[in-house]
Length: 120
Image (tube, rainbow, N blue to C red; front, side, top):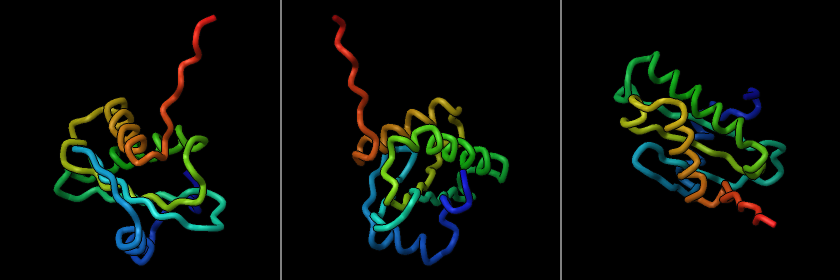
């Protein structure tokens, strides 16, 4: 994920928290804020020390970034996203993280459900 696609500054995180909308499941909270004139969506990650040690937290962040990279074609470009990982994520593997994040993105209507082609 490119540097210009990351939210790093505290004011930017606060802006998304205060002005944005949130959707959650047991593993993740997704905050989103529409930003006009952006070329790419941006993502900020928050994983508390309560979730696990540094190795665990970095693995979770790597998984989340990979999921966003995988689905970047399907996500709107003019949004800032902040993802907060909750405690159950510490025991999850990549496929479970992907499934949970897809659920949150579909719930927030950023990721469309794929329609299956009818058989002819």
